[in-house]
Amino acid sequence: MRCLVVIGFSQGKEIRIMNNVGVLDRAIRGVAGLALLAWALGVIPGVSPSLWGWIGLVPLGTALVGHSPIYAILGINTCSKV
Image (tube, rainbow, N blue to C red; front, top):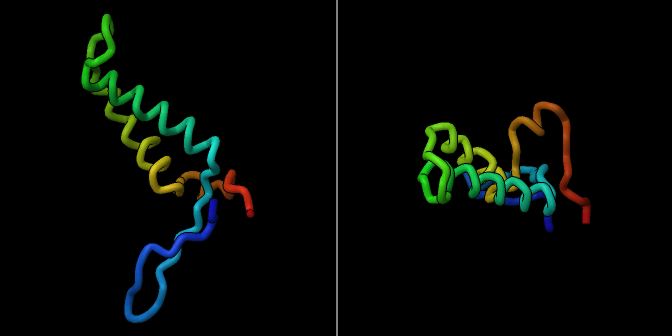
């Protein structure tokens, strides 16, 4: 996995974002995010839907993008430097 990703170009210059979420971290966030969204949508048998489940969009989004703003603020990086 690459830790530096080019996300686009602006005025002829590359716009880069540094991934700070590693593979295992992304997998855990993805599963947790999907589980919370399933709770929000009420697809888990025997469990009432809840608005709190929509918070699952946050870990799911960071898993898909590979960048966590909170990790950036705290200086945490779980992305392996390969």
